Length: 365
Ligand SMILES: Nc1ncnc2c1ncn2[C@@H]1O[C@H](COP(=O)(O)OP(=O)(O)OP(=O)(O)O)[C@@H](O)[C@H]1O
Image 1 (cartoon, rainbow, N blue to C red):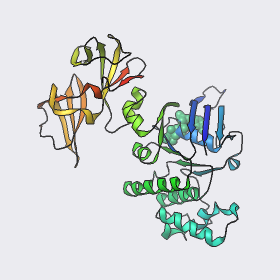
Image 2: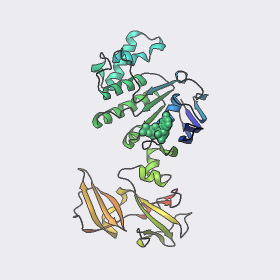
Image 3: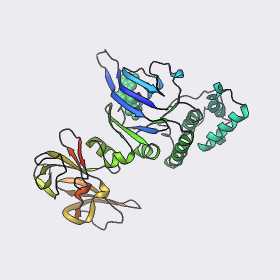
Image 4: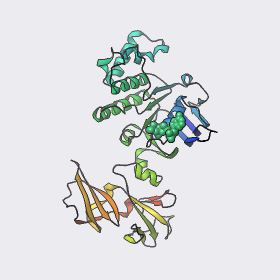
């Protein structure tokens, strides 16, 4: 069901001497059947946001609506929300199967049908063999999957998943991401996933809400965030390795990238995108896979050259800055050697230097 957060704030200790403003004027409009991820570094406010939706934290200001009904004033049990939370305890006296099936209790379902559904969701999460065991003595990863199974088995208006696979090994996590996503989509659930792992957000979410310091920076599809980052924070936070950045200035002929002393280090000849006037202080952004190594108008010194098995990551020092380029094959250049490099100005992202707001993507046509 659709979930709408309107002007939501979370202030811990409001009115006290040291209030913490954890979430600031958050607006999110999530469509029925959509999976979204709240993505950001530790302390950015994603868990606080999720806990307000679940009802474990009060909303300081603003409203939350689920399926057109206001829920922020309701107790958690009446919100129609299923949750898998880090440390969201399983009941110790019950077996894992009973813990998972417990969620279906109120639904007056046939016992055999419940058992079959428990078995199915347990197989999906690779915990079939531990269904008869009690939570104590199980690994963190097993308990986490049981908690996730308990949430996924419920037909709720909304599913909230807080770092649901954080304790699993990378390989298992990669397999389960796909399965969990398929299950959510098959059932038409709406889900909010909290993660600090952009790989997970990319793999599972239709849209990603990037947060920093309690503020929503951008809410868009993974492709939007990659190709049209709203600001310099999203540009450098999202994408691996991070976007290269070059402080510079717009000129009548294009852009000048400046070194740390403020001297012109690179001249990029290109017509200015509309809305950017000569003299504007900017930061130019270039994704590493758009930096061409071994060819181009510029020169840089190789400071590292790593072959990752399927691509090379090469760091070069140019314009007094460190730039990273991705090369699809081994790049045969020694450390300390000087190599040509270049890029298409159409691949540049241009940000306003003072505010960080994006001015243009694909600097020229
Ligand atoms: N109960 C609380 N009382 C006071 N401050 C809190 C409380 N819970 C969280 N905070 C603060 O609110 C801010 C946001 O925390 P939150 O847990 O929402 O971030 P997060 O992005 O989920 O981080 P993490 O990934 O580490 O869980 C942080 O500064 C945190 O210290």
